[in-house]
Figure 1 (cartoon, rainbow, N blue to C red):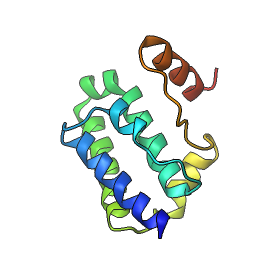
Figure 2: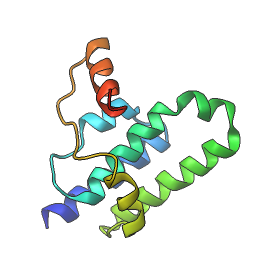
Figure 3: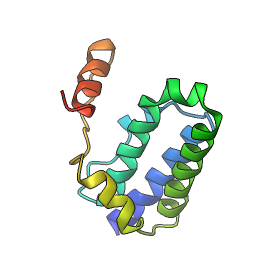
Figure 4: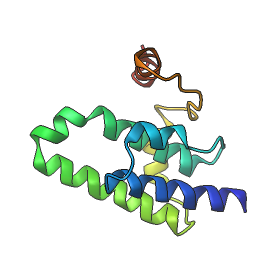
Length: 119
């Protein structure tokens, strides 16, 4: 039951980012601490979304495709459903878990970004 509620919550978080009601950093700070692969996948998709800001600005087609992808993830999770296995597998082979501790400011951003790109 907790995973179901967490999925719905994360789906709403992603929708709030896509509709500019919340920035990515705020949404990431609110992610629940869980072992649910669906939520871990959504977390990494959202971090990837933030990391691609410059590319999204330059390439309209890429931006639309990424927005549609995140919308699909958000809709699926909001319904409490599991993401397709292939989507989870795409992230699972590169990233493990969710970084739940975020230090405010530039130091926190750099720490998280370095961890994200595996330096």
